[in-house]
Amino acid sequence: MCGIAGSVALTDRGRRFDVAKAIESIGHRGPDERGQFVCERVQYGNCRLSIIDLAGGSQPVFNDDRTRSIVFNGELYNFRELRHELEQKGARFISNCDTEVVLRAFEQWGDDCLKRFNGMFALAIWDSARNRLLLARDPIGEKPLYYYCDGDRLIFGSEIKAILTDPDVPRRVSPLGLVNYLSYGHSVAPQTMFDGIVKLLPGHKLVVEKGQVTTSEFWDVGRTFLNGMRAKQTSADVAVQLRELLDDSVRMRMVADVPVGAFLSGGVDSSLVVSLMTRHASERVKTFSVGFNVGGNEYNELSAAAEVARWHGTDHRELTITHLDLIQVVQALVRQYDEPFADGANLPLYLLSRFAREHVKVVLTGEGGDELFAGYRRYAADGFAPAYQRLPGMAKGLVSRAVSAVPRFRRVKTAVQALSIEDPGRRASAWLETFPWGALSRVLSPEWRNAIADYDPVRNFTHYYGHHQFEPGADDHLNRLLYVDFKTWLPDAFMEKVDKATMACGLEARAPILDPRIVEFAFQLPGSMKLRGWSTKVILKQACEGLVPPAVLKRPKHGFAVPTDLWFRGEMTKWVEDILFDPRTRARPYFNARSVEEIYMQHRSGAHVLDRQIWALLNFELWHREYIDTYA
Image 1 (cartoon, rainbow, N blue to C red):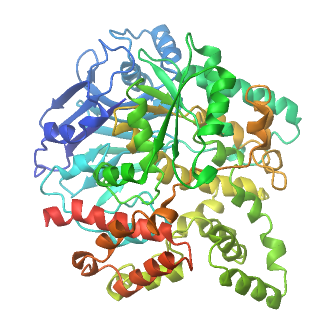
Image 2: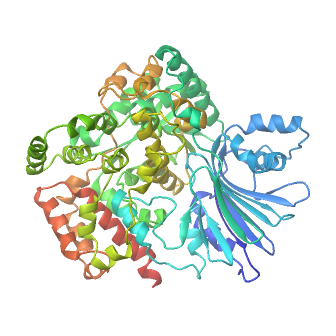
C-alpha cells in the first residue's frame, strides 16, 4: 500500500514537476519509505506502507535493463499465482513483492495484464523505449487516481493535494463539481470539485504516448453477468458456491507480513468476514468497533458487535465517540479528503482507523455486501413504485400532503418523493440526493445556476440503469439498480470514504466481498435470489448460516448513522452558526444566503430533518477556507 504521484511531459514545453514535494504531501499514505524516478520526460515516485516483503519491496521497481519501471499503490492478491505462471514462462524475480509481479506481467502481456489482476490498485508504468506512460485504476475503484492536463504535461496522484503542490495548477471551483457535490454529498467521477482536475474511473486506464492522452475501459461486469444466468440453479447450490468464493477471498486478503485485523459492526457483512478470518488466522483475530454516546441504539452498534466478537472469540476493542471528538477532527479531515465530503460517517471511520492503527497495519472490512446483494431497504421500497404510480392522482396528493405535514420522518418523505418518479434511473438518484433539484435550485445563487447551464447531475444514474451491457430482454430491475450503485454510489461515496479515512492513519483496508470474482458471481444471480419482499441479502444470509450468530441474520439493516441531527440542534449549535453565518461565508458567490438560513432554522426548530444539507454546506465552507481562500 502506497501513495503515488508524478508528471509526464506532452510537449517540449512541459515543465519539471517537484515529485519529492508531491510525495511529501501524501506521506501519510506510506510512512515507511519514499522513492522516486526522474528522467527527461517523466518524474514520479511513491511513499510506501510496507505490508508484503518488508525488506525487498522498495519502489520504483525496474525491469532487468531499466527500460521500464513502476510505482504501485495497492495490493495484488493473486500475485503468487501470477508469479508462478510468469516463472514458467521464463521470468526471474529478485524480490517477493507484488509490485514486481505487476511489472513482469506487463512485460509479458502488455496492457492486457490489467485484466488478470485480482486486487485494489492505482499504478503508473513508464516505458522509456516507447516514451509511453500507463496509468490504471482497479476495477472496483477501491484506490483513487487523479490527474490534471494542461496540454504540455499531465500530472497525476493518489490524492489531489499531490497535484496541487505544483503552483501552476489552478485552484478554481468547478460548477459541475459543485452541483454533483450538493446533489449527492460527494464528487461524482470523473469530475472533482477542482476545475480541470479529473478522477480516473474504476476499471479504466490512461495512456500517454506521442503527446496524446487517451482513456479507455479495461474491465466491467460483462454482458453475461447481468442476466441472471444462474437462475436455474437451486439457492442451496448457489449459497455453497458463494460461501466458497467468500472464504477464498478472505484467505487471499489475509496474506501480509504485518498484523491483520477487522472492522466489526455487528451486521451481516463484517460478521461474515470476521467469521471466515477465524478459519485462516494462526492467532485470535483482532476486531475493532465504534459507537456514539448519544441517541441510544440508533447510533450505537457496540453491543451487536460485541455479541459477534464473543461468538468468534476475537480480541475485541471498542471506541466510544462524543461530539467533542468530532469537532476536533473535522478540519483535519477536510484537509485529508481534498474535496468537501458530506457523509458524516467518515468522522467515526477516521477515529476508528486511528484507534485500530495502534494495534494492526491492515484491516478487513465488509464493504460491498449491500450493493451486490441488495442490502438497502430502498431496493425493497423501490419495488412498490409501479403500484404507487397507479394510484389515482387524488390519493397520491393526499399521501404527499400528509407526509409533508409530519415534522420529521425524513426517510418516509424521501420514499414518497422517489416513488412518484416514473423514470427508474431518476428514481434511483432520488433515493440518494442530499439536495433534490428543487432545493438545489433554491440554494444556489442565480450566477451559479447559470454556470451549470443545462447540466443534469442525474445523468449517470439514467445512463447506467439503461447501460448497453444489459442485453435486450434483460429486465431484472433489481440488478439494474445494483449496477447503478456499483458504478456510482460504491466507488464515489464508500470507496472514497474508506480510502481517505484509513490512509490518513497509515492503515490499509481490504474488502473481501468486492473480489472481482464475487462481483461477477453476484451479477449472475437473478434479483429474486437477493431480495424477497422486505427480506434483503437473502442469498448472502443463506451462505452465512452457521458462520455468524443467528441473531445477526434476523437483525434489520442498520446503517452507520451519525447523530448530526441531534448535535445540530444541541451541543454543536454554536459551532454551526459560527460557520454558516460568518460574514465570509455569507459573502460567497455560490449560494443564496437567505435560503441557507432558512434550511438551518427549519432544522433547528424541528420542523424538518435537514442535517444532511447543513453538513454539506458546512463541509463546503470549511473546504473553501482550506483549499481556495488560503491560496487566493
